[in-house]
Image 1: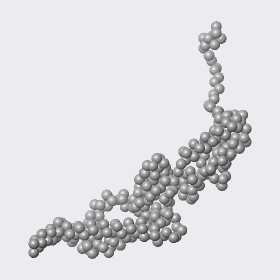
Image 2 (image 1 turned 135 degrees about the horizontal axis):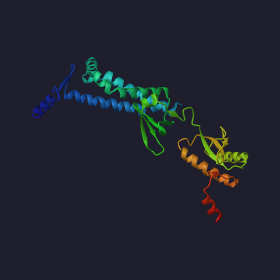
Image 3 (image 1 turned 120 degrees about the horizontal axis):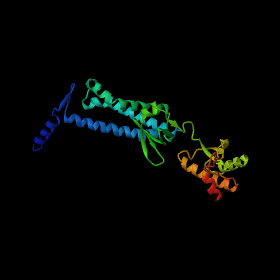
Image 4 (image 1 turned 90 degrees about the vertical axis):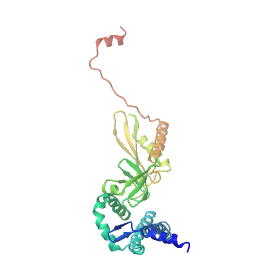
Amino acid sequence: MLLAGPLDSFSEMMGTHLFSLGEIAVTPALLFRIVLFIAAVAVIAKLVRSRLVPLLLSRSRVDDDIKFTTGRVASYFVWVAGVLIGLPTVGIELSSLVIVLSTVGIGLGLGLQKIAENFVSGLIIMFERPIRIGDRVMVDDITGTVVEIWSRITLVRTNDNVTILVPNAKIISESVINLTHNDRQVRFQFPIGVAYGSDPRRVEACLLKVAEDHPEILSKPAPEVIFKGFGDSSLDFILYAYTETMVALPDRLRSQVNFALCAALQQADIQIPFPQRDLHLRTVDPSIQLRKLGT
């Protein structure tokens, strides 16, 4: 009897009519049930994505990005099923909800246009797989590794450990360079110039020896040396070499190879020239000539 008053007051407060959305009477009790429903669906979707799908696919030989995509799609299915099945249980009829959404849809449409575009682009990325987790990509001036693909954005981590949030629509609608789309083998160029008078075949042998001795450069496809041409001050060569393990560390690979090239050419007594110019004077002031002659 003592609790009857507070309980009655609490029930009356939870049943207070706040406002209406179409035929839906919004009360604190309804809002509380909706919050619990959303929290429950979110927990179930996360468990399906992070636990159930990896467990079911743990013994299969599919790629990690396929497992990731399957988990994402499964979590979206949980949300859709939860909305269709769960909303009527908390007191919201789908027919009334459709009327409400159609009423406010025009106003929200413009504001949610970018979100919807990025969400659809995210689904396209997950199914068509133009980029995958672990790919090395270049978007505008950003170069990094894809670490995660979300519904609206893709996370690209640079070598500086900075994570860039790239909208999915940008990846679908603009040019994106995927350095590792087909496989992890990426060819690097190492340009170098040597002094005129050097034996080109000796230079070629030195460059190939450096590539063969480097542990991160592949022997297949084999390294290759191109005699690019005759520069103003040097004979210009390019060493082409492939790597799989140093794709994400291009500056480190270039530094290691350049150190080795410098040492190999010095050992072979092949000079790396500095810029040289021949100066021809057609007219000279007479006073300058006198000073030169010391008169």
